[in-house]
Structures are given as structure tokens and as C-alpha cells.
Length: 114
Length: 113
Image 1 (tube, rainbow over the protein chains, first blue to last red):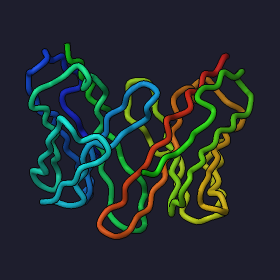
Image 2 (image 1 turned 120 degrees about the horizontal axis):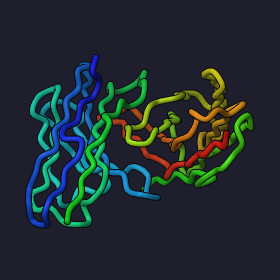
Image 3 (image 1 turned 135 degrees about the vertical axis):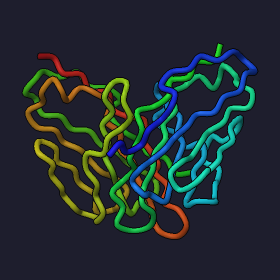
Image 4 (image 1 turned 60 degrees about the horizontal axis):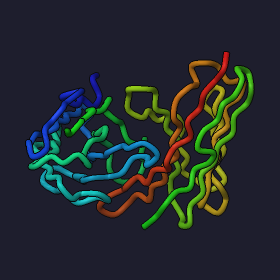
């Protein structure tokens, strides 16, 4: 099992460019999440999708949009990249409700905006 | 919003030493989780705690869910070089439409051989 797969692993963008970060999970999880990680800030939730067809804002949603394409895939889009969006982005998935085993994370996308 | 205070921020220890780190919160959580992040990788779940007072071990790792449900600690015994990484605590209140993890800012562990 691959778990959670993120693409690309690395990306450099110019200010104002757009791009989409892809995430797919093969664990039949209902819920999926996008986090960003910055030095000294821990992981902060950008958007999440509790189930197919639903998305909600997290702690830091400004400048981002998401699409839950189907149960497996959850993409994060930057419409007009800014240097403040330079970060490491992690996608995660989980089962929903009680009996949680915790979130499973992908290996991250390292994004630099110049 | 809910916040977790994780301490210490960083630790430099000698191989073979024991390590202790903790997390506190101003509000109650139903679940506490401890993750480890290796350089260049995503966080990986180490231990999950579901009941107040619960003490759980995973090899050399031991974690406890505080009685008040506002804190948790993680101990690593007899540290080895591969313990190097960033350790995150996370609290969650599941149920309803969504369970959302709140992360601490991490404890960076360095181990000298």
C-alpha cells in the first residue's frame, strides 16, 4: 500500500504563478486534510474535507482553494502564489468519527515562491 | 482557538540517555497523539491515547494521557541516534462531523553518539 501520495515533491514558482498540489490516498479514508509547515510554527491546517463532496476552511485558508475530486483525491490550488506561501505542504487522511488511528501523512511538497 | 504548548523546543542529549517531553493545553481533548517527523518526511504516528490517565508503551517509548485531559507526556528510554527528529504532540476532539487535530510546535531532538 502506498498510503498517501503527494506530487510534486519540490516546486519553485514565481510570484503570481498558479499551481495545483495533488494528493491521493489508497486507504479508503473518508477525511482528507492539507497542512502547511513553517519553521517554529508546527503544522497548521489550511483546508479539510470530512467526506467526499464537502470541504471546509481550516486555520490558514487565505490564498488557497481545494477540490475533493473523489474519495481518493484532494487537491490544493494556489491561484496567485506569494512569497509568504513558501512552505512545506502536507496532505493527510484519516478515518472519521470514533476509533481513530490518527492521521496518515504524505511525505510533503516543498514549495518555494520567488 | 485551541492551542498546545509543547516543551522543550529542542533537546541535545547523549546516546543512551532518557528523554522526556510534554504538551499542555488550555482546553480538554478526547484524544492525544504523538508523532515523529524525520528530516524530509511527513509525520508518522508513534502513540495514540484515548482515555484520561491512560499509559501506553511502544518499545522504548511511553506516553501518558493526563487525568485532566489537558496534558500529555512522551518519554523515550535509552536514546539511540535514529531517535533524531522532530516530535509533535497533537490533540483531537472527535465526533460530530469532523475530528480536527491541533498540533504542538514540536520538540527537536538531537542525539550525540
